[in-house]
Amino acid sequence: MYDFLENEAIVFFLGLCVFFFYILNHKKLKLIQSGKIFIACYGFILMAWLLTNLESFWIPEVMNHLEHLCYTASSVLLLLATWSFSTKRENHNDPHQHF
Image 1 (cartoon, rainbow, N blue to C red):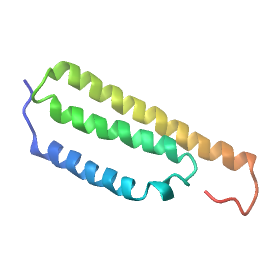
Image 2 (image 1 turned 180 degrees about the vertical axis):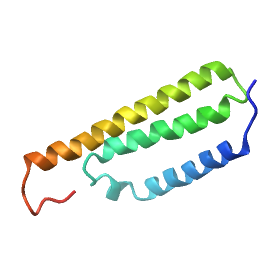
Image 3 (image 1 turned 45 degrees about the horizontal axis):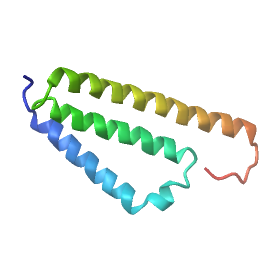
Image 4 (image 1 turned 90 degrees about the vertical axis):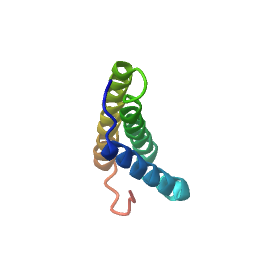
């Protein structure tokens, strides 16, 4: 069984604080280009941090694999979001375009 590390619990707690900030400001954050993808990306990171803490208590091998799958999904979503920025920027050369 894995050891419980306090720093991982602190990271998850801080991540929940950022998620609470998102809940308070979700209308403004949805206006960001590819905002939904960024939010899904953060959701996967938050889930990975939760799984990191759960692997100390319950089926550690499975939790570890799920954690890394969440990190992979988050990375793919981040790639899609940044790619979306570059393709939309190239297709629209409007100087008044807002991000």
